[in-house]
Length: 450
Image (cartoon, rainbow, N blue to C red; front, side, top):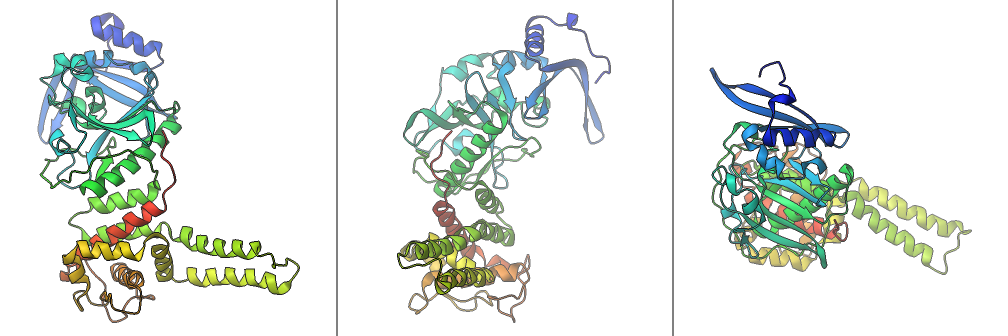
């Protein structure tokens, strides 16, 4: 770019309007002509005028670059009321009490999302001649023409809703270096009628809603989604995928974001079985302290509630101490913590049904020596099926992280990438993924609200 910024007297029409509105709202704006874009050894000179706006982004600022020819898109928005959210391609529009965030696919080769991926989902509707088409009619030759949405209610609230659908062109421009490319419309998550009007509150609403939606979407569609971040690489080609026909929503439940993040990371790690297995395992592990302490607290609370309990009796107080010691002994074994968590979250009938619906998985897990150092599942055993699963899951975990601690076969060598056994983990990955789903659901954070 040239070093000399042009003066406002060189602006007219939409350029002048946007510059004046930005400055009135306290949004920094500069503009210059010419831009050097390097492609390896090739350098192209762009003579377009580029505008740089400096939007609020919590305690920081977010640079937003747009070419002059696209300024009419920005002028049609209430951009003076925008606050960008975290490091996502997302913003809060305070004038509309809405949040819009660009969504990407997590599966490799499926980063850029198109309408055809969602077109078979119940609730999908095309928007022809609607608000988006009318506001951007002059620019339809730049973007994919399809405008669509899938409305998703929030519980029983009629005035609050979220939706997946076509991203507005200006939100597409929040993607890194999008101002240099022929623009392709993206998919966006839109949250309407939110009460959050501050950056941190809106960011928390966005992360909570997206975690819940993406978790349930992956369960229903076997298709992992994520919020797009500014530095994400999006230049990949979509590929086909089988879909199911169960509608989304209404959204009622909020889930632990850290556990959902690990779960979605596992869903994205296709082709990397050891990483995928560990990610799902860690999503379960996230709740070990919760359910270990929950059991102990329940027993201690019941002891205090006993009418015969005497606080002045050393023998009665010793009962409390013994319960706490038992909790310490249980917490010393990670395998025991896994067992406690699975018992607290999953009914044995659910596991039996899962295996019955997945005969290939059941057959594989019931065989001996397919993967060395792990137990097979035997539904006729005196040991409960859940406890057998806990032993198997933990044994594989130990082999992946190269440990020989309790639960692993001391004679089994570590599982390594590209080993034949690593390629055999597919059915165990499906099992631990199912377990992670059930644990995340059981440990939910209550009603979802925006």
